[in-house]
Amino acid sequence: MEAQALHIALHDDSAGYDISPARVPLAVLRSFARDVDDFLRGSALDVDTSTLDVAVVPGSLAVQTMPLANPGLLADLRRLASSELIDGVDSKRRGVVERWQKLARSRRGVAVRIGAAFLPQPITISADTDYRADDADQWVRVERYFRGEIEEIGGHTRSNAHIRLPDGTALVVDAPREFLRDDKVNRLYKPAMLRISAEYNVVTRDYRQARLIEFVEHDNRADESALKRLMARGTRAWADVPDASAWVDELRGGDAA
Image (cartoon, rainbow, N blue to C red; front, side, top):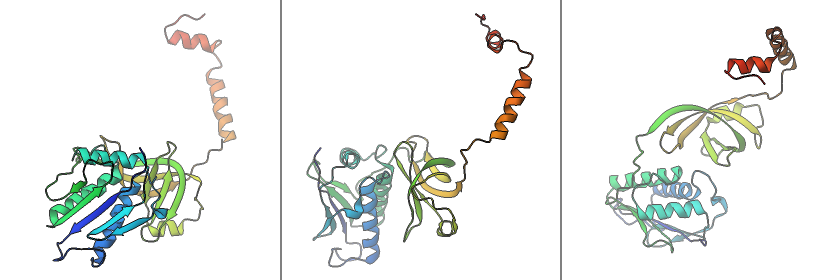
């Protein structure tokens, strides 16, 4: 599919007036910009919003993006246009849609509309819609170990670490600012083992609300003395077995050749 420009608009008159670029509460502007950024980037962070040009559209609080060709984003938009069940949507985008749906239900006059030329009609999230995930109650709290390369660490307003996993996917974990400040190791662009806590969906296998517990130091170098001790122990244990292969075959119930 060719690149598509997206129109994402927030309609809100709950403050007693129609918000627009000319007048908008700062908190609304801040949360809308963050949600649009999260929606475009997704959990894989494969849309670079730092270099993406947008136009602020009059008439509501809306942005028009430059054409985007990210297949995951465009596929998710097709899903949202065809069904209000959002189980198959990227986990980060699903979280944004759930926030918008909750906002529309809690405040009268609020709606979010997403339009693009390839969609049969704009996606509308309002008090009259019911965007939801059937797997919403399938989240459990877990601790996991992950190995990957740290691509970004720190942050101005939110401290976290961005890890590229061996399968190519990205994992973002929150980390206490003091923990990162006091860490004495330069970990950027280096492989690392992390222990995290997160919510894990047993149906979709997605993670959310991931938080760093610790970096796990791991030494891949072999301990030569330990290996020699193990080899010596094995040699003693097998000293009275004349033919190890025949002995194993006999245990398995087979006939030694």
